[in-house]
Image (cartoon, rainbow, N blue to C red; front, side, top):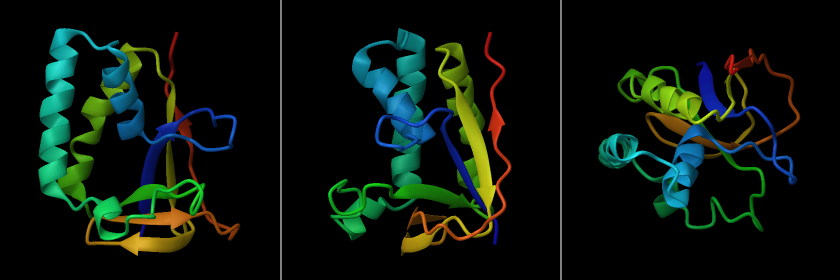
Length: 138
């Protein structure tokens, strides 16, 4: 199985890289999105919320930074119906000059949660194959 993650190109002060949905949500919460982009973002977030389970509802402490400070979500490569939505989010980030990268791995970390489409992991330090890609922003 191949796992895929889209995340901030740069880590924050805690060494974490926010995922693309978190980056897009941050833009929306800050009021930075144009009305058209906000409408697109809201519609796509609603679709994604309906399309797959929220891991945080299954395990309430999953995203608690005091319990799992580096928990990250990865798509399974078989989740094509979800991955098909990603290019729109990447284009949104590009429009607002938010740099991102794509990471692929066969062993993304210690699995904390898993469903048919995704895993949530904490890094294990295990060797794995990644292929980071950055956007080419001016």
